[in-house]
Length: 358
Image (cartoon, rainbow, N blue to C red):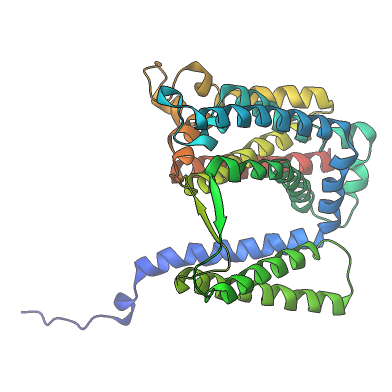
């Protein structure tokens, strides 16, 4: 009988663990590399972000978007106070799954992205950017992040709807607020973190950067420590906030809207890098984005609308109605959004590189 050889040290290495962690480590290193590149190009991010506040189109988009969501907010309040079949179980989903909302949402990304490269080419300033010390991917990501930041700003006023829609109530505790210290630490850490992140945009000296990094580390540490202690202390707190409606669908719905918006913005920036006219860029981006929205208009997500399964899979309104609007974070739509976003950004970089050598 052939003797059994002792196992090799290589056989004892958990390859599945390595196969899991190696891509994660590479992804973290890539993210750090991209963040460093964005930090170096922060002047371009600041330029693109504040350019929206000097553009009349941005204000028109903001007013129309808030006007439509305000009307839908009023309708949702009427449904909350109604009885019988007119009631609503998820009030925020009733706003962001309405067909009138998706008409505005369909035009939102094309109008915000049509000027990013098309205006630069038409005015002749794209050649100036090409001669800057930034790489092409830094230029593309800086424009994209600036646009994405303004997209997030547009959504901020809708947070004012949440206390009324969720039935939020605040009350004082009956006993001493033993858990209040951790709440203060958590809020202080969040404030320091946000403040230090904002300080990354302006130009600071070496001493200022060191102080800013210290504030960032303190903010992250305080927010993590205070947050863990806050949610494990059990209270009572100085002010206890309760909600009559499950708040988790709000978090999942805003996550889904932000991720899908990032996808549409990536489509728009790709089209803007390929054409010279802003109106043509907006029309083409709208045409490409319509298949991701059309299934929400063709039939109900839960009824027999005769919609193919693959068409439902790429339909953002159906994602919001069936998953995110119900508090379910489905990874399949997120993978779709991330894949389309990365593909469009990579193609935008290639388009800019082609312009450089043409």
